[in-house]
Every structure is written in structure tokens, then in C-alpha cells.
Image (cartoon, rainbow, N blue to C red):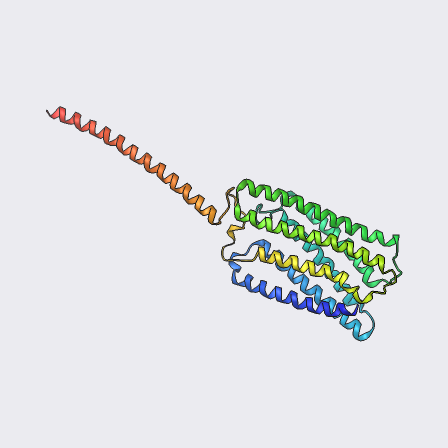
Length: 307
């Protein structure tokens, strides 16, 4: 466990750096921020608190020889909250919140219930793993805590990718080129992260099967550290894709079905405007000709009367 203290120290600095960069961008374009940016800010703040609590927990454990229960409970709680909020962020982004739809509508309660259940299951598992003794829960008894979390993670994954499919379909119908490209990059990122997760789960099973007596304890720390690194990288990519800018309307929700504001959208709008202008000018010329013809007949009639 000793290398985890150094790892969480570096992760605390990494989250601090990410938070600083995000905060500067947020303050720079605070007048043009979207509601989604506040959710990303909350996840970064929770990640910073989580890494800091774990670092102080292991540092205190290293110096005193006993695990402080108070700090451990806080660290476990922040871990569960951050994991829950991170999954909810991925879900609402996949649903197109703030980009394709202004609100979640009637599914808000379902999302909230799923998040609450996941939080409870995650807290229970984390508390047992970090506060209980090694032999407290073993074998089949531990499955009662591991299986709910695994099933809820699978539910999140299925719901995220099904929502992404619907969002991509809507963007294709609306021909929102910039938003479609944004969500394609996001989908590719999630697909790669899921693939890496499956590969790492296979390696973790192999590692535990080939080391039943924990003889490879020097390398055991990076089995759990991988998930923190993967979560950090995924959060960093989301920060890059949805970074605050001076013109976020290109990625914001608009009631207009053709709510694309990229260069291609501007050119299409311009050509459409020119076409409408040409039609209007033709109608105006035609009306002027008709009016001239009518007034010309009227002048001829007046001249005939004078004659």
C-alpha cells in the first residue's frame, strides 16, 4: 500500500493542474458558460478532494501505523460521490443535455434514482474494502457487495451508449455538422475507454488468479491505480471537448432544428439568404412592371379625354 501514498500525491497535483486550467478558461469566458460546464467543474472539484483525502489518509497511516477512521470515511465518501457524479455526467452528456435538449424532461427522476442507488452500493463496497479486516468478507459473502456495483456499472454503460446512438441520430437528421463531429469524438473516446476497461479487468483476474498468496504485492498497487488514471484521462478529454469559449452557441441547445453555427452552416445560411433575396427582387421587379403598365394605361385614358 505504500506506493499508493505517492500515487495519490501525484494525482492530487494532476487534478490541481486540471482544475487550474479549467478555472482560468471558466473565468475567461464566464459570460458564455453553459450549465454543463458547472457539472464538469463539480466533478473536477470532487476529484481534487478525493485524491487529497486519500493522500492524507495514507500519509497518516504511514507515519502512525494506524488507519484514521475519520479520514478514511471521508475519503470513501468522496470516492463514492465522485464516481456517482462522474457516471451521471457521462450519462447526461450522452443524452445531449444542453446540446440537443435543454432539460432531461421526464427521465430526470430515473437518472436520479439510478445515481442514488449506485451511491449507496458504492459506499457499502468501499467501506468494507477499506475499513474491514481482510477476512471479514470473503468468497461468496463479498459477492453481495460486488455484484450490485457491477450490475449498476453495466446499466450505466448500456444506457450511455443507447443515449449516444439516439443523440447521433438526431444530429444527423438536423445536419448539425459541428455537434455531430463533437459527439463522434466523444463516442470514440468512450469506446476506447470501455475496451481498455475490459482488457484491464481480464488482466486483474489473471493477476489475482496467479498470485493467490499476494507474493507480488510490490505491483499490486497499480491494479487499483489504473481506474483513477483512466477516470482522470476521460475527464480531461471531456474538458477539452466541452471547453468554455467566447462563442459556445455552436454547441448549445437551440430551438431551431438547424441549430448549427459552424462555417458550413454559415455558408448554407448565406446561400439560402441570397436565394430568398433573389426571389424577392424578382417579385419586386415584376410588381413594378405591372404597376407601370397600369399607370401607363391610366395616362393614355387621360390623354384621350383631353383630346
